Image (spheres, rainbow, N blue to C red):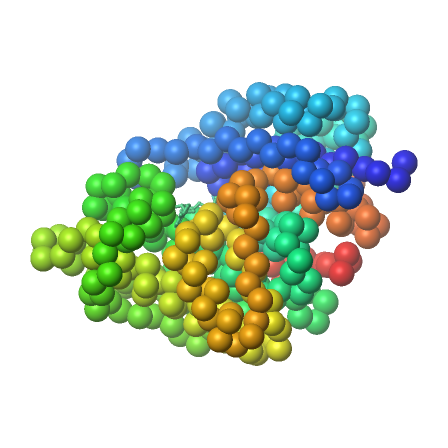
Length: 331
Ligand code: AMP
Ligand code: MG
């Protein structure tokens, strides 16, 4: 059989996703079920419970919209890490069950690398530096010396969490990113904020505290604070991305992760790339930027095509897996 259909399962954090992709890279289905809370952050046990509840329905929905049955699936891929143990376990359990019950090969995939691989599939980018900006993760990733390396990253919280926590603090709800973006578009008045870049890394903790204090002082409008937040945080991210491009001698920047949906971030990235004659790539489907199963399925296919195989006993989750722990045989 020359063409393989892969079912990919994503469950590293608040999203349970099932993607179905064929070996030509065609996305046949990409079902996303996101767990959200009104108050507070994600409690791992609650998110995992959500994943258990929606698992069966998500698989049926994905098979239905792809117009296939489980017998047509030739490979099962799942996110093995990094992520929250409770959540990862649900995806891994579902993958093993599908694999054993239907005698389908199984493969565990690194979540961060999948964000990069789906971008390489859906844009003309060949060897990009990835600015991966999501809820929990903020990393600049580049393929160097046979592995995906983290060139820079957040020293504390992910930029998405930073946006979400600030949004909750000022009472605009969850998820915060889109709401902050909306308010920011109504202002162009910059309030001075701490700008924290340390070498190749960024940090958002101090910026978050400063923003909360400014909001609580009642001296600044929500709009001005959201505008200034975006200008500052995104400039920090693009400074380290630009340094990574220069350091790695690359001329393609790819955006991935939920925060990459932000139009202002995209615009700032475009300006930076133009100035250094680099190309910017942003997949235009929101569903492949946020956590999703299609990127897991596609990365699983790449690994499988390169001859990588895993026995069921090798499919343990890896909540703390580092990007450069992963052996890359497909490039
Ligand atoms: P992910 O973890 O990749 O699934 O992405 C979720 C994160 O993306 C959340 O923290 C959201 O607040 C953030 N997000 C989604 N849309 C936007 C947007 N338009 N601007 C900024 N952040 C966003
Ligand atoms: Mg992600």
